[in-house]
Amino acid sequence: MQSIKEMVDVTTVVGDAVETNDGSVIIPISQVAFGFGAGGGEYEISKPNASKSENGKAEAVPFAGGSGAGVSVKPVGFLVVRMNDVRLIAVNGNPLAERVVDIAPQIIDKIEHIMQKNKHHSRVKEEIN
Image (cartoon, rainbow, N blue to C red; front, side, top):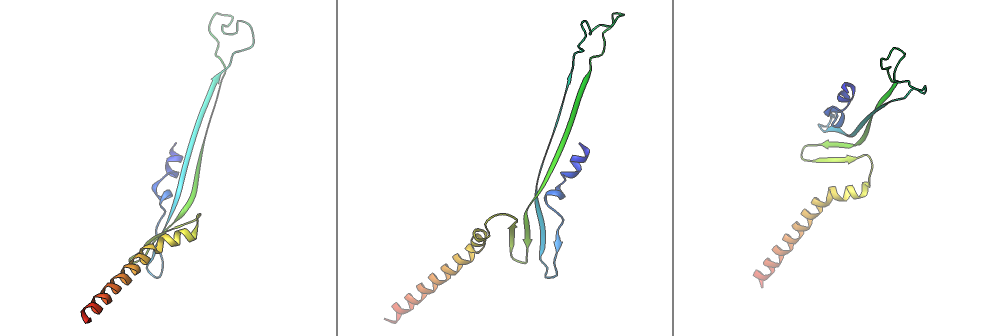
């Protein structure tokens, strides 16, 4: 259990940050899954009247047991932090869809700017006429 506890540390899920030359910070993100199981049983001795010994005391019944554990660490992506921008770059997935989601705010800002510009030009034309 102590080994599993050490493996499932927060630094395993969110890795150590790495700073690049341009000032960006890259943080690896992972998915951690773990599990364990244990079992056992007592088995009868195949001799008749095997539960008592010749002197009348109970004999020990054979016991068998086992346990196991497993840990899986799967990289999910990288969190990239720049001056005014934070992005998650996924290891798997659709890069086109992620790119569309990343640039959607910029597209909306440009559309709003164009609409405001058109309203301003319409007002100027109305004032001239």
